[in-house]
Amino acid sequence: MRTGPSKVGLRRALGVALVGALLAAFPLAACNKNDPPPPPNDGPKKTEPVPTDMVLNDFLPSGGDVNNLKVRMEGGVPEAGGAAPAASGQAADEPAGEPTRKMKLLEPGAEPRVARKMALQANKTEKRMLEFRRSQAQEGGRAEERPPLALTMDVTPKDVKKDGAKVHIKLAKVEVPGAEKDKAAAAAVAQEFGALIGLTAIAEVSSRGSVGELSFEGSERVKKQSALEVIDGLQQAAEHMFPPLPDEPIGVGAKWEDRNTVKQGPIEQQVAHVFELTELKDDVATITAKLETKVPKRAVPNPRMPPGTTMQVDSKGTYTYTVRFDRPAIKVTGEMKTLVKIEAPVPDAPGGKQTINQTVTVSHKITTPAP
Image 1 (cartoon, rainbow, N blue to C red):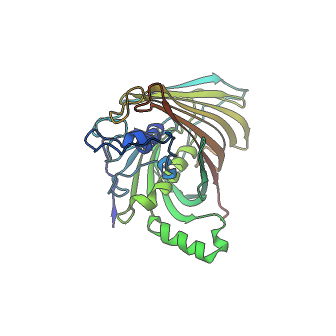
Image 2: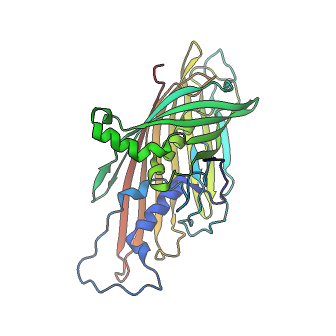
């Protein structure tokens, strides 16, 4: 049974969702004023590691399916909606603040210059494959690399209009690279991800390549545990297949900045992406990008955390896009590294401080499979 996408009120930015998950895992956050006090411990206090599964984007509402999901993309920064309580302590029905977005041309580049637009062809399906890898390391703790995933997608622009289109990104196949040589591993992959085949992300893409709201259609059998990484992959594919373009005419060497500020309750996310048109030959463009997202150091707006707890998030990445302006990007490669730091006072230890430093690295590679 297929159902259409439904809209959910709560929206959480990716960096905020990541921090929220970490806060939920932070040992001090588990305490509640109504819980019985823990037994005394005379041993030395130590920092507990953050569970490795806490870095996934919690896009799906707890207990719900993929149809209870809408993701909003602003300048490459995804915001996810779900029915789960906001980790920041924000009310679940409180909407995210509207982003303050500025696209600025830094250098026009060499002549000839042309105002570039996406001229997507309606109902023309293009196949793309996304391979993404995720690893994480915690200072003084364990490191882990997740198995890579490869998603084959059918990408079809629909409802094409002068100012943009709705692009349907349908999951056709899920693989773990290398598993095809191991029949048992291939069977396990098929069992784990089989229910996700046909899952479709619908992205609103403007004629300037900006990706707006992203919704999902899928089987009611699609549940949280098996869908998290695949939904993350489809969302990232939507973001990276359409680099944003400036309004002004540009030539080779042009640089432009896509900057915005997204407020989620009391948390502010600062985004600054700089793009450069490095090559243009036979209508095939090469665009490079330096991506940066920050949540500046600030008090943690969570009543479960002790007063004085602070957090900060810094993400940086570089990407290269090979683009024809009448279709999704032909090839994309890049890597994003996110540093998360949380500091909290240690109860019953005046001046004591507990710190978690975690690095999450995600790499993406989008290619066009051979016919």
